[in-house]
Image 1 (tube, one colour):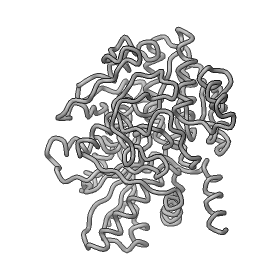
Image 2 (image 1 turned 180 degrees about the vertical axis):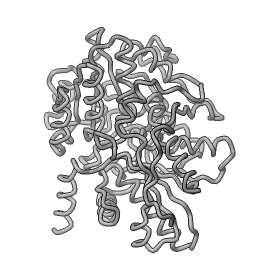
Image 3 (image 1 turned 45 degrees about the vertical axis):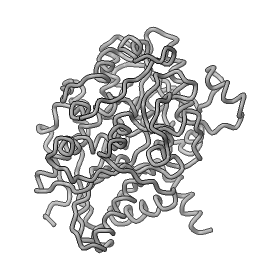
Length: 434
């Protein structure tokens, strides 16, 4: 390998534009539908909870969208993030494959989520909004939005899925450090939460329930909007700075991936890395590029879900969107990859999967943690439980290269570090000793 294990990109070369994959899709995506009329939803139907700039990003067909200067200035806190050659992992696997990972855990909140939280807070501030309300699973999104809101002088209220609220106490501490208000969802302060608790007082919660609570709170005040950390088109758009950087970094070492991998719950980090490379596949430049979304076997929206219109939340308040879904009332098991415990997949990713541009895999929690432990021992980074799904598939692909003797280049997104998830690793290690 080259003498440089870590590939750094100068800040002066940081991307100036987001990439919109909808511009290169041959088949048009199904439009969102109004939850009441079931007719296609227009910008006006979304204006109660989103600023117009984000609504227009949601529906645009422009190929590239300029990143505002103020947002780029915030990105410079940690971006460009490093691209790393996993040479020690390659050696222990004895594979001819080259393994690279984009390390988004280098961002200030420990994950990729600030790529969109900065942008969303900026556009809401620009629109005169005073407060943002959101949901969070594992807490990485809530942490990122709390930090962004503090920077722009916005209030922040967060509904955190109860099982993760209890599993990951330091995530909520982080959010409160930035003056956010954090609730364990479902709560007694919204109709959506009370309805769930009336049916199941011990409900562990879900992202669908937390979204319902957040939207219900957001629509009560004109100066308050809702903010979402995954799924929607504008969120996928903001995350493509990951892949745009990575393309330049791979070029710097004379490489192009044969396989691109990302974990997938709502789809934001997977889209962020893969969409700029999928541009080459969709336009015919790299027809053989393999792109793999990896999800938990206990919440397998792509591999077991149905491609149909469904609500993004449990109470049915959001527009209906065409996606692979397990049903908006699905309550996932209490796995530790809280950011992947969502019933549906982003419409853009669902569309690409339906038309064969990407593939999907699903793994059990224990085999994912085993892969994460091996990776940590070799590369010195503890992956977030969510990111560990991508680690697992990268190892699977590298071992297949060992069997076939083919020296493929594997690229995956290490979307977050697991330093606030050590309680989850403790439970995994304890189970291994039993």
